Image 1 (spheres, rainbow, N blue to C red):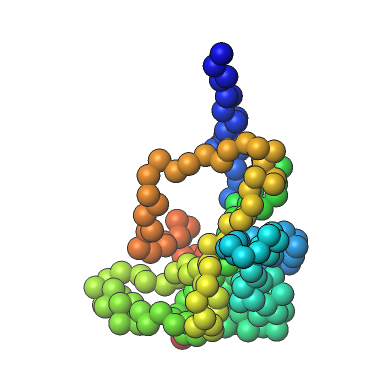
Image 2 (image 1 turned 120 degrees about the vertical axis):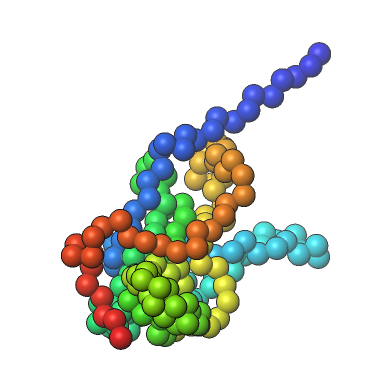
Length: 186
């Protein structure tokens, strides 16, 4: 007798929503922080369930403190534009701290030469969208993904990308400059 196993239903790609939020306070701190952890590897010597490891630089508290203190914002040229991927129920399943920038100050990507050359050639390098942690050279995750999607999905499988994801070299807003957010440039 052969037993057939039924495949778990797949969640439809069309049911996801991507939001851009301009204040981290618009996202529940516990939900953001649940994405800002990396699953800890299981230790062969331990029978305990490993604890997830939080990265303090992408925590809701740290990024909110930067916003609340004025370290990031319109006046400093770090305009928060955090990206949040939500499931069909509106719960965040992935996020990225992101900032619309009008300059390259306060970051550890030294692209001023590229910006200058592009603008001398007639292009417009700024504003740019940067997924990063402001003023922080520390390494760590910047694309935050639910480390345990099976807990929330009821056993359903998440859709797989058709191939490897390729990063795009630059972000160019589709809105004309007159309707773009105002950010400091210097």
